[in-house]
Image 1 (cartoon, rainbow, N blue to C red):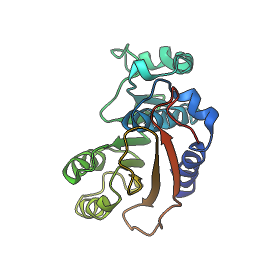
Image 2 (image 1 turned 120 degrees about the vertical axis):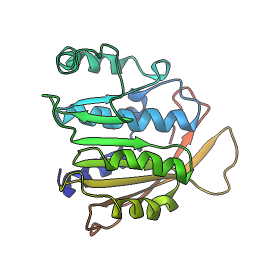
Image 3 (image 1 turned 135 degrees about the vertical axis):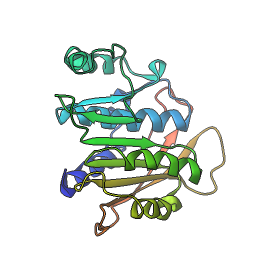
Image 4 (image 1 turned 90 degrees about the vertical axis):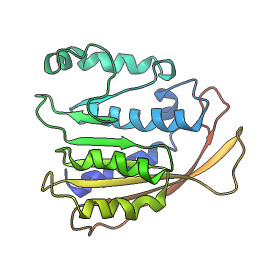
Length: 220
């Protein structure tokens, strides 16, 4: 997957944060930021994987998922059971938090780990999983922008798993001086894309707000 395609995927993710219709499609009954991020990011890459012609494998909290997702899953569930015959539940994780499986079941073009704790040890642990998976695009979503240098250090010490692998790091950080539990919380999203040569610059960033008390959780 070339850098242009990766940048397109990332920019579409940021743009989707401004699309209330898209947000409503994803889930309902979200009441906490963790539920927001977990469900939103997984569904974004779940839907993108389907659009790209892959089997996206992940796990959603069933009681938080909009029933419309079930309709989309049915489109390829029978085919997926032929590739992974022992996986009858939907949706499920396969090795990591989310991945795209090729239709023949032989390759994983994209994999993702999402660590919600701003804990450098937990972040490094999850990032190490990505280092040893043979995938061309590896996405790490964290809640601590200042963990990026530590992840780069890990990368520099790790042998190539795939000569074409590229990493997309995404940080989601709560803006300072917002300690309230109920109401709007503003977040800052930043991204950085890099391969072994680290010659690709930082990507654009955006701010967005979530409202953790409404039925649909997110409002602009």
